Image (cartoon, rainbow, N blue to C red; front, side, top):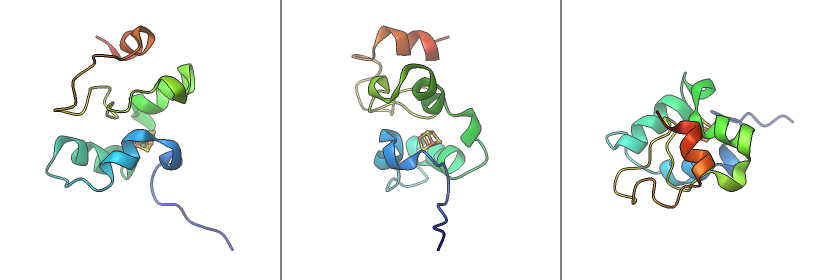
Length: 89
Ligand code: SF4
């Protein structure tokens, strides 16, 4: 029997997914979760591209799929320079 997984295939190992799955859609993180992890922009996810290029070990716990930190979580402080360069302006 085949298990059908809804949404992004990387959800099991993704720190954002695990954090945001219980957040309300009204929060910024919850809205991004709906659009990226469960929705049409899955292929544009910054977390996915950082993980592809640099590995899951460097993906910050508080990064959102648009490359910004989850509001109220201390910003980009502590993010590795290579990650900041990858998602920066
Ligand atoms: S944050 Fe990105 S990599 Fe993680 S589950 Fe959502 S779409 Fe997939």
